[in-house]
Length: 335
Ligand SMILES: [Zn+2]
Ligand SMILES: [Zn+2]
Image 1 (cartoon, helix red, strand yellow):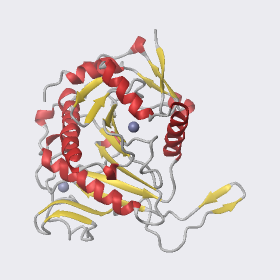
Image 2: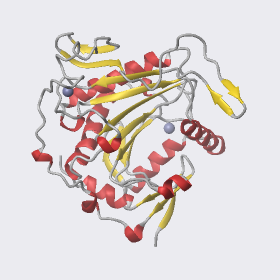
Image 3: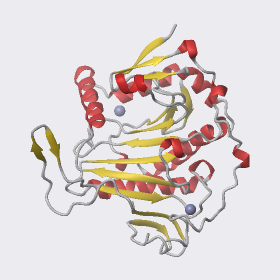
Image 4: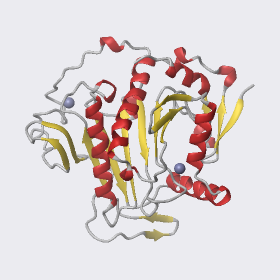
């Protein structure tokens, strides 16, 4: 019997299509990860070490390492979705049309000077640097008076929207709070009003008790397949300590998270043959960084299925796999 499950955080219903559910092995990418031969350096890549001037990528917002021997760099996106503020923000309205200047910041975080690495194949200490750099940039961008929310994310592979192979993440800072972020805030406020507890802490506690959907657990983090996962092998990485903002994660937790993130990505890499994926750090927007109701976390979504007309028409997802089976499969992947 198919099941409708509700994501309690957004109150969204998901169809778990048990009748046509695919076994985890059937969702593997059809490629040989041992046979991918990318060069360490590519002359035509704007993010490779040594190509900075050739591609006019000399403006640095942040760097780890020496100028000539860097480990990580943050630069402005060459084709930004939004531009930094020149003068005041004005919202204009004519009839039903409402618009404002495309103000904001769009940055690229180049995770390694090497062309052919990805987070799943990097050293754990390199991932720690990446996480630390996110924290630095989010803190800096949040301090800008015209910024309301900051969205750090990573696109891996074409289906996830990545146009360059070189390992990188992006950070977009917005002068508004997006609708999804507002809904998540509103629902968590409502839950807190009613139950006097954080909905995310509640989810965490309940997943720790049931154990069915856990992929891995450390001192500070829990990785699990959400009960109402929208798509196969979607993962939530929850910190055990309640905190609303990623900027408040402590050094020891960042160290633990680098291990947790890498293990999660390696399980996908080896278990599903390097699937395309997106991850997003869901950290509190401005003004909510110390709230009792919001709890930061990471959403990691392998792009193994495509959304179609039904999803567009209803805003509901059909997941052709079973979250508990996905978790069990990933738990068993040796890394
Ligand atoms: Zn490169
Ligand atoms: Zn919490």
